[in-house]
Length: 507
Image (cartoon, rainbow, N blue to C red; front, side, top):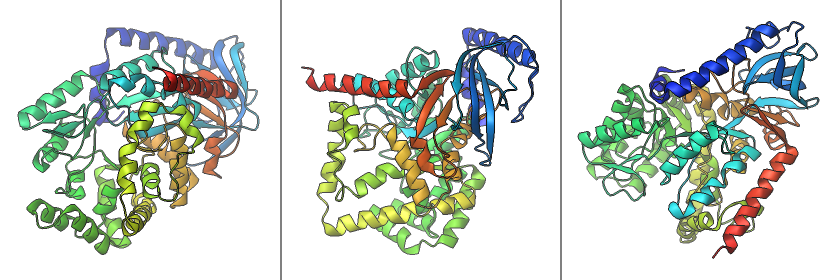
């Protein structure tokens, strides 16, 4: 686990958790010793024994997301929610597996992570948001990073309920309420006016055991924004942000920014005169439109590559959130009102889509052409970020307010866009698995399929390293060691559809 996140997890441990972990570790140790396995190699040979385990996945092709290698004809041995062995088919001589999944012809990948989602819309929409949780699981998403909203208490409660197995949903990593300035337009924010208020906000977030710190740019002063980044870093925490126009992305990265949310900020970072443009905005000599025009006029791939290498050197990741941007950019070509997926989205959440739709409807032909061109220019920098070594995180921005950007299937759409705009299927798969786990400091327990890690596994009917569309061909999802076959996944979707239909007819 990275130093930037370890401190949060030290805060989260209490005596009961430690006892639970100790019991689980002891159980895993008994299984491993009986199997003769303490090795993390892809293939290990188990001894004959009469050990019982929870699950055996037989004869599957395991995808190593680190390098794209396929390991055919493997048995996955799972016990107590963990992978305890990966062996050649037939070598797992356990006495009894309480459940067996036949994996012949299937491809096993780590569960997908959506690294930018939102739950919100006010207390009246708590149940509509809660109904979204199974949608993620049904689409192979076993982890989500909640990037702030106005339902933090509910999200924190869901995080614990999912972890304890009381709620069906993906593992939740949340920022809690985000840090903003006084009179922010966003409900639920922690509004700060000075250094003392900033310290108090950070103290409150640590007390709430959040997984990272989200900072945005609506009314937060540039000086407090930069101070927040440094204080988060100095506390050993990890940050995520929207960057004020008056602050250069390069300066934010150097101050310790963990992840840039949305590709537009990364595009601005690639303009060779970005620092000058930011200073001009701060001085009031250029407005936001002029800053963007200046960035686009001066952007060159070679100069951008050098800037992105500096982001990579600083450890600043980028979450492009292409799908949400593309939906809005091209609303003139697809208004989405006939989307079948709307049957899974509650009426209150659908109503929150209106503000973006109404804004886009006011654009004339020139404005529509500009938003098309701007999206295409920004999406095209994906290969530059990748070649510079920037860690790319797959996240959708799905949730309230973000029109027709759907929880669940939206990540599949995001991954399609990654490939369309220049990443390989393997790079794209990494962005949705190991990259997120590394960013959050959980790569010791998640992100790849090796013994010792969590049994969050997706079984696919096609090879995602050949064609990323394969992530849609889900046969089975294993979450915390529990098997959800295709029939169970379809039942999840039907249950959500039924719940949403009842919400529409409720008085």
